[in-house]
Length: 317
Image (cartoon, rainbow, N blue to C red; front, top):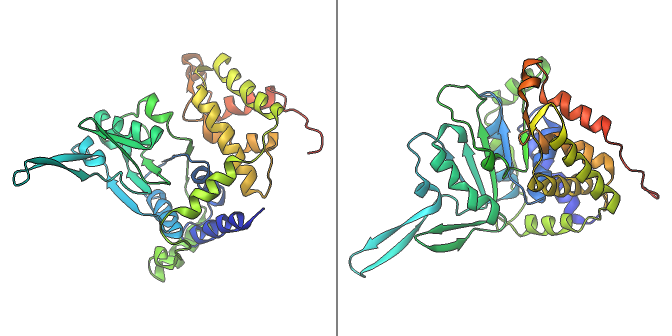
């Protein structure tokens, strides 16, 4: 692999200065960024979701905007709005917070569905439309959103169309006792974010080049078929009321390429697909009533799908 692969590893190492014991989550978020995807981090308050996003932003030197979502946040706060200037007799566009490289949507499920939907065009097409005028967003453009667990006070469920725009859903989880001791030690020395080194110039060019390199990672036709078979099984599984959408299949292929790339390979194996399948599928599939009654969880269903669908054997790999 070229120099870009090592630069990605350096970003991961910088984030590890702040986030303790969540190496797989860090790796997964880095893969999502270079796969041109968006990240949803779901977990209880206080486990480091926002800190994770801020560490990535600083390490990569990306222009970052952050919004703490509340019920009174308006769509125009995100997309921008036009203001009439009396002296020139014209409307002038005022930028919204989406005009950046990395947008941190903190507690996204605490705001209204109308505001949540304002993100759809930006996440899918990397552009926003205000008063009939479409404006391109910066390159790269990544959304890292955090949400509190379903049922938390003041939260509203994200619509399925919104969830499907996120390439992955990451769960942080509580630290072990040893990890929490290390967190406390680092906090005694000050804010760990201050120790994160900015690696790139802030223009986003390095990340864009990484994304181009990842898109060129080779994927065998057998691996593509394997992805399609996994997606099909989620749609026909009796324990699931809804399965992976075609957009989800595209996301699985893109993230598999990124995972292979971060592992130092220029080709994708079935094991790369397996490694990221849960993170791509967990927020896109919904359990059937029968499964809920039987107290079956998503992870069990997804594991069973991986066991049932035979991974292809590829000669030379």
